[in-house]
Amino acid sequence: MLARRIIPCLDVKEGRVVKGTSFRGLRDAGHPVETGAKYSREGADELVFLDITATLESRETMVDMVRRVADRLSIPFTVGGGIRKTDDMARLLAAGADKVSINTAAVRDDELVSEASRTFGSQCIVVAIDGLKQDDSWQVYVESGNTPTDWDAVEWAREVERRGAGEILLTSIDEDGQQTGYDIEFTAAVADAVSIPVIASGGAGGPQDMYRVLTDGRADAALAASIFHYETYSIEGVKHYLSERGLPVRL
Image: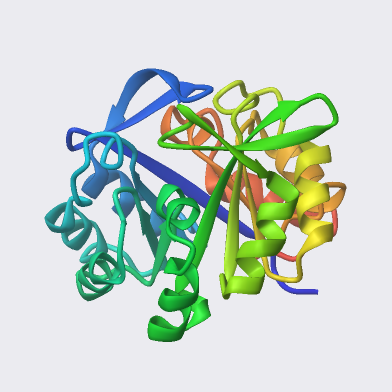
């Protein structure tokens, strides 16, 4: 069994790490460079950096900030937010990102995921899917959770895999920031529908939630923000909890 990954997430707005609830009510959580370096030292398996207002503000991701964070890391680094074309991806990869995460642009441009996969390799392409529960399914939202689309999240996951995505970053808008647990049903539905890795996001309140999403939810990795930013739990503590319960992790 492959080692399960624990991934802190830096949601960045105006040069600061922030965290909200269901994509709203953002609170300050530190500086991206120092926070990223701290997580690298503390044993995170990867780091995700999302420039959360770049798409809404129709601007490019903060390349200089990405470069400064990358310079302090010794772990894989995924960057998203404001990416609209392969030229944007090339700049971020040149600045030190190992992977790029696309969301809105993947929905708006039918060819972007395929083109990016051919250009950079599928291992570099993460498609972020933000889903909101609608009766017995989940609807894909874009533009930082502000705009609904016609896509069902499970069908969209299958489609982006077909187009060449190497990984899915799956966020439950309903559970984001709530710290009451991931949407296990949502995560399992997507994980069962695709053969590429799924990173679960939205709702981590503690190690027990991560254990459940990595087992019952069948996710390959668990992403969290609040519990790490505000030091409710440590990455080391989470990994020991998982290891003691038989999940393979890198200690």
